[in-house]
Structure formats: structure tokens, C-alpha cells
Length: 474
Image (cartoon, rainbow, N blue to C red; front, side, top):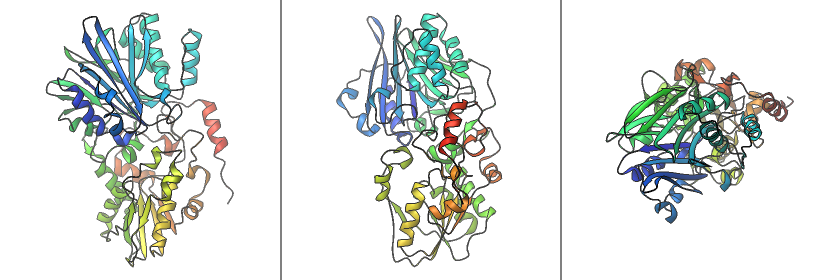
């Protein structure tokens, strides 16, 4: 899961880009990159700077500050899905040099067919140098646009057809004075279109556009291409749109709570949807009478508010997280060290029973540390409430749960085994029906809960997952 931003034609595009990008830091703190398209005497030129590190650190680097002012910008905030984390060769924006000039792309999402697409390109003497799916997408576009002399729109359509998966992307080229944005045929990954001071822009979430004073126009539709240039905004349908399958984990976990969900007919803040899920937890299983409600800091707070509103139980607020600790889901290789000091609990509260809420349970690393901290503070009984169903299946569309370093707890353990492992007395998951009541019956991709993948997954990837996730004996 990454963040993308694109702006065309604003006189303060550089400043707006920075502000929008900082609003999306939660989507990736592995690296940050910027490309700028400028008009020069010899024609159009694209310059790019990209570096490892959090956006707040990257954007103040002298070389990034020295980028020239241009009229079109792209930004990418990286959380690694394809390619090794903390590797400079896998950063975006990705560019491909051609005889017509550079083609530059930023993308949020993933394609499980990268091996097949890479083999196709290699057979056409197109070489790829990293396992980054962004390079594969850019090289494929260069092949269709330059070698096959197809239009940009037709080339994007062929990319959508052959590079099956989930992606929301921005594109610029040194041979066309325009900025493009497009989404996969199912609209799994979000791309939000906005307008500020008569100029158009797009980003992964509404909050990024609201932070720069933009008016929200709406989501880019499945299979749609938008073109931003001096003439304004143009819409194209590159391929036949499929029913939207917006990523449910975007709503449950990734998106900022103050961003708006536009997947339903009426825009609603993700915070309110998450509170509704917490209320559904209470509706499905009555709480202990003398219990207090406690959310896992940050990830479980919204569900705790909804649960507390529904039950009128008091809020505990005794479990704390180090405010400087990053989201551990984004820190796969440093998680153990981070978790050792991430959580603590206030002692002396005399609270005996806790209803502990969290938005999801994937690997279960946070919860064990949370229950341990609460026990040390004197809590006698803990019931863990998860505001989503068991996470049983890996995501190959941009949420990094299909890799070798990920183990899905619910795919290998029973509920009772999970309960013991995380140190809880009881464990409840929200039912699929409860999810529908909380988030609506609109088009969601819930493959991680149901195993129903809108884009079929290659057999070798599923076989590798099953080999790593053999159920544990009772």
C-alpha cells in the first residue's frame, strides 16, 4: 500500500505537492520520491529525486528542495510490496528512457502477474532490472507507446488488460505536455480527483486534497483514464469497467480516519465506518457488565468508540503506545525490536475487566504485547474484540500479506489457539454480516476474509501460501 499525488498547472504546485504528500505519510515511510515536468527551451524535461526515509526527512533534503519549478508534479510515498524493503533500486517514481524521451510513473498497488508480464517483455528484448512492479508497468507502457507506436490511451488499456492486478497510477512523459491518472478495471486501489484554483489534481485519499484546499470531484472509475493538461480535464474509458471492488482493508485500517470513503453513494468518513463496526461487535456479543472499554492505541480506537457508544460502558484509557513508534505493519523487518517498547499500561487504575478492541488481526504481534501490558497493570480478564472477520487469505493486490515473511495467524490457528497465543481470556471476530452492516453492501474486495479474488491469483502463488500456512494441531 503506497501513496500517490499528482498536480498539473498550479503556480504553487510544488508547495501543494509537499502539503498533500505529508497528509499521506501513514501510507508509507520507507521512501519518498518526486518527479517534475518543466517546459524548457529545448522542450519538455522531467527531473526526479527519490530517497529512502520518511517523507518529512526526504522533502527537506537539499537535492529535493533544488528541484526546479514545473507545471506538473508526481509524488510517491513507498511502502514496499514488490521488491526488497529499504532498497534504493525499488523506489518510485520509476522512469524508462525511450527514443522519444522519458516515461515516468508512480503506482499504488500490485500485480500478481509480474512474472508473466516480465517474461513477455523479455521476449520482446525489453529488459527489467528490478523486481519492482512499477518498473514492469513503466516498461510495458514504453513498449506499447514507442515500439508499437500506439496512443497513450490504447497503451494504458493494453496495460490494464495484460498486467492484471490492482493499481492506481500517475503518468507523465517528456513528449506530451500532460499528466495522466488511471485505475485498474476493478477500482481496487483508490485514486481521488480534485480541483484547486481551477487546476486539477489527484491523490490516494481525500484528506491529501482537502489539505491543499481542493474541491473533491470524486473517485477515478474502474478502468478509467483521466488526462490533465492546459485544456483542462478529460475522461476516457480505457477498458470495460468491472463492478467496483474497493479494498476493504483500505476502509478498515489503512486510510486516515478523517479521509472520506467515496465507494458508497454518500461520502462518509472512514472514522464513522470504523465506529459502526465497533457497535456491531457489541450487538453480536454482549459485554461483561463490570468491564471497561479499551482500544489498541491508534488501530483500535475507532472501534472502541463505537463499542462504548453502543454499550455505555466506561472507557479505560490505560493502554498507551509510544507516539514515536511507527506502524508496525509497515515495519516488517524491524517489528520485534519496535514492539518490545511500543506499548505500556498505566498501573493503579484498579480496572479488573477489559473489552479490548482492534480493527483487525493479521499476524497478532501487537495484541500479545497489549494484553501483557494490561496484565502487568493488574487487569484480571481481557476479552479481545476484532472489528473485522478472521484474516484468512493473503492479499496480492498491494497489501503485503502474501510474502514469505508474513504469517497469517487465522490461517494456521483456531480461534481458541489464537486466544491463548495473544494472552486473552476470550476472542471475538466481527461476522461477515456485521461487516456489511457497518460498511454497507457496496462493492468491496474482501478477498483477505473470504478468499474471493476479483482478479484470479496464479496457482503457484496460492500453492506457496498454502505450503507456508499448514494448520497447527489442536
